[in-house]
Length: 281
Length: 192
Image (cartoon, rainbow over all chains, first blue to last red):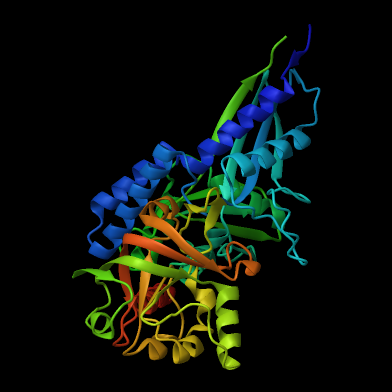
């Protein structure tokens, strides 16, 4: 069997296109949930916020400009088909695509060294963009990019509970949302990772944000969403009925002695886009 | 109530605004975030004059993304988190007759400093494409040595909004009211 290949230049161009889409067009399921929130909102102040958000989304798409000036740091999820053979370095190609995107879309240069705070100027650097790899059956390559802004990321939290403290998870979620108030730009999507390890819980929480908002929530997720919305924080923290659009929980088995819980807060601009490239002989 | 106001703002126009009112601004506004606030304070402490007048001005907490072509052009200019400017705002208001502060997320411990003189106007976070559309012209830039996001940009805006009066001149603060209410309902839940 001859091996299946993907051309590097085609790959870079496809990533650039996907990045542009992620920054300028919000996924349809997210827009639909924001529209629903607008329809059912009774507070005129919150309604005005949601109306501005919807107008902003339409304008960004129409003019193909970033919907928020915080174009985020870039997080990639790469699913590699096992039948593929890549003759270029994936990480280097992704970095190149990000540098190109920074100039051409343009993106705000956000990546700095953590202590020296020196800006690299092109959104790349040590460990950035963040790339998560997994191997899947088949002959295609799927890339998902999720730009993450700092306003909401800064409001995220992780706690290592005792295994007997399962009933405290709900309060932890609510406390995190109350402390954040209007700062992470609600209506939020809340991604929660339960189990795994210290780092795995956080990764699960981030992955939970990628789940489509029109997929049904289970009873626990719905209970958390109802409790969050009962807080009345509302759009932009100005009060209102929708503080979050969805709560998504991802779980993994964990050590019998631990219960890690990570909460990843996402602003209304739950940005992400994917592309699939098929290998050629 | 909905108001359409022009800058520079007059004191009596600000005093009639109530928390929850909607405002649209037209005229010049000044961007200023962390570094610009620090420099304004440094200069005024030394008794030096600022290169721009903040008399009746609206300050916008914003670090815009600009592009230089023939002149400067705004690409994207949404509000940044105002909470970071909370501490520097009361001393700034002591020497500058600023009448409006535009930002997102609200501010802490500023109601006293804003009393009878200045309003906090909340602009919808993340709405950078919409904001850029309402900015008609970049009039000038001051202190560009602070870097593009931290410089003071004088922007000409038209019907900039909707801006919600988050903190009025009478001491009402919607953000803290909402936060206190949420804290109370959380406590109730913990007791169950």
